[in-house]
Length: 375
Ligand SMILES: *Cc1c(COP(=O)(O)O)cnc(C)c1O
Image (cartoon, rainbow, N blue to C red; front, side, top):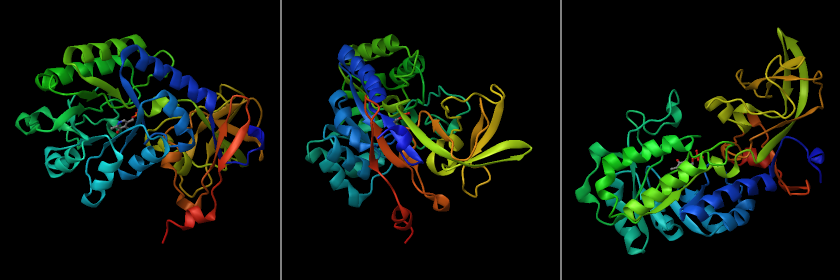
């Protein structure tokens, strides 16, 4: 069917836009020999894993369930990092994953032998305590008091037995220059132990597929690290894989005025795009402008009871009316994976659009998806 025929709210992921990103990532792999994994936490639409697996080296997981999804649906290299593994999960994690990355020396010592006995590669997450983002503490693993990664101060070179790789993840939606500076900070603090490692994982947060990203600087950095230390470099971007590859199609339910013009949509910021409130950010809306750029400005909000369930203020060429359809952009990442049914909100359907513009409805959710989680 065509996009216009989908009932709303519905996520539509566009295969050609995804492939455009995958081509760029594949180019980085081909030119540098690095390996790139999909960080599933950003995008777990597993119907696309076979396609993604044609381009990337595998999946990165944050725990047992993502590890299992990666193994079941892509079945390539599967890496896992968690700040805390549960004893009862660990043997299954070992059976599913190739690289198992620990967040502390205590977790490393508690579990590493079970991983090593199974022939798995064991890694440690380090924290260079080198912040490259400002005013963004929710997304800064290098903030003071961070619970993510071992800092140089707490690093114990005498306890590295069995550790084959180091992992850092400190960036968020950033260009190559902050990565280059971060790698220098890592070398300054952890350089003496890099030559004995087999791999170094640069984490995610690389906005590689964004217009204007400095690919040459990224590739030079990867080359230099691989040549200097003899390590295999890994990247595990989430955002960059599906950046701008998906949409959320919604319908206007009502419009009215309270000092400003307001439109209520059948989608919710709190339930269907929580990053709009958490980051916060303003999602692109196709055909709309910033407030007052076009003649009719509306505040767009959801149908929940949360007063702040507001997506943002947008302007339009014509007044909005109930039944109008609106399409938000960049809705593939950190959307489906973060959905919730607060207020009894239905979950948006999930559709895939192919290169001909044909849409296939992959999943429609219903009342039971709401009810089954509540007792
Ligand atoms: C979140 C995360 C990623 C992916 O980050 P993006 O910003 O989506 O690229 C990769 N690795 C780890 C350890 C993460 O926590």
